[in-house]
Amino acid sequence: MLRTSLNWQQSKMSSTMNYSISLLRKREIKRETPEEDLKPEDYQQFRDVGAACLSGGDGQQLLKFIQDEKNQGIVKSMGCGLLAPLVDELVRNKKSHDHCQAAFTQLIMTCSSRTLLDSFLELIEDMDPGAISETILVLLPHLQTVLLQLDDNRAAGVGLALSALHKQLSRLPVPYTQQQEEADEHGLCCCCVALATFTRPFIDGVKKKDENCNPTPEDDELKTEILKFCMLSLKEPLLEAELNRDRKSTLWRFAVEIMIILAAIKESLPGLLFFSSLRKFTRMDTNLFQESAACLAYLLFVQLIAIDTFPAVFNPVFILQCNMEHINQLLSRKKESHLLKGLALFAKSLEKVEDNSLPVGLLDLESFYSAPQNLRQVLTDCPIQHLRESGLKVFQLFINKLDAEAKHKFFRCMLKTSHHAGVEGYIVNNIRRQIQSSIKSEANKWFLGTELLPLLELVLSLPQAAETDLLTNMDKIMESLNLLRYLLMRDKELKSDADVWEALCRIKDEYLKMLRVCVSMSRAYYSVEMKALKEEQKLKAKEVKEQARSTRLLKTITVKHDNVSHMSPEVQYQVLQSALVTFDLMESLVVRIDEITEEKQAKPH
Image 1 (cartoon, rainbow, N blue to C red):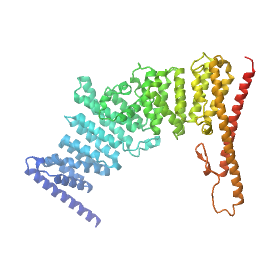
Image 2 (image 1 turned 180 degrees about the vertical axis):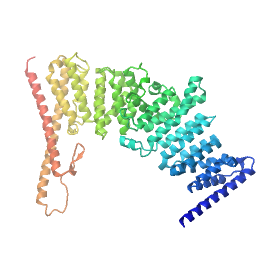
Image 3 (image 1 turned 90 degrees about the horizontal axis):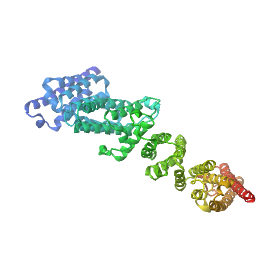
Image 4 (image 1 turned 120 degrees about the vertical axis):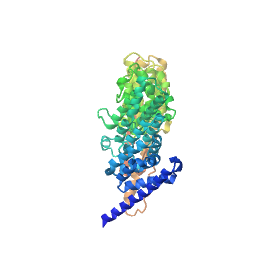
């Protein structure tokens, strides 16, 4: 009974198709100019009939109709309407693959290439979001054939196709881990491979034209469209992907393919990276180009892809100077993939620069100001530990490459702008090391003498005077006290300049005076809080049976951004106790500095 019902439905569908096709065929025969007599509803009917035939499993009948010599007129006029149902069937049903592919081939042979291209672009634009990769893989071979058949405006067609394809490709999630890339759940990796294959005949055509004759404006336009595709691919997916030259993954090979394409179309890597030939990107967003160029710099200098084609005439300082724009671009983003690439590019760009060689003039460049500031934000705000650790190594490497005057200026800048005690403490530690180095080797005026005083005034200061939160600023304060103790112990070198020593003593006295007041006030406050906590706990212990409310007596206090009132009493007590220990430690350092001062004053000159 079921088989009879299915056969009847299929027979009915076939009859409906034959009837509809016969109507269209009659109309086609009657007219002299095919496009003039066909109406929009005729195109829709033809498409619906084809879709019904395919969904009913009768693709063989549709193929016969398309191949029938008597039907070539109507197929030529309306055959493009069958592309969408054919694609849907190929994506949905693998069993009808051969019939659908043969029908595709016949339509491409029969229909106008320009009309076919418009239909393909419409298909790409209206692609099912749930079947992007499957649809792209079905379309690419046939779209390539259509574009190769175009005689006029091929470059524009290639550009439209690549742009539309990349727009859909960018909607797919980029696999980030090795496991995700190997699984390729959303098909991004196989689409990248297919796209690389898709572009090859057009690239080969450009190469042949370059070798045999002067390129035409059409050839130049094609090169520009291919270049745009490369830059789009650098932005997405390559900038988002995890790339490792030790693991030749699919996306790593796609990155290699992009670099090969750039070489094939004779695009200058220095031109793209250092001299920004923006005339070729009139239709590209400037920010998009900057991100693409940043990824290109990463592939070249970190992954070393195509590094053998890069001219050796550029010195390391020039490369660093040019790459700082790309580094700044990457470090200004919050994505882990961008930050990883930015830190790696920063480190690689610094590696070949000699220590103590970068002149102070470079710090006047916008990129040399912004990139370290963005790096500082990674150190202070990034929640990912391995990025903070890598960032700190790069931060120190950058400091090492600056000459003495540049270090001096950079330290002053960071002390004024970082607003973070951890960073300031790290800078103070570096200042102490520079002073040590200057004392041990040849005297350096930037870290000995009058030039040292502006730094010390920034170091030996409390941001809110007596109201400074000592716990929040503990890192800087402890490093500052250690620096002050070191300077007093090495007074012989500093006393050679009486004015400098006098100024240092004045700065020291003012700082210690304010710090004593601050420590005293803070200790008193935290002692009161600890006493109140103890009293509260005693009251609660006595009233535990009759207590009907949960009013807290301890007012809210903030310690290093932790809300104490939300902690358990035991934890609150530990925090308060730790604060008091910190104040004791600060005070002990202050006392030791006073002792050193007295000892030095007691010794005869």
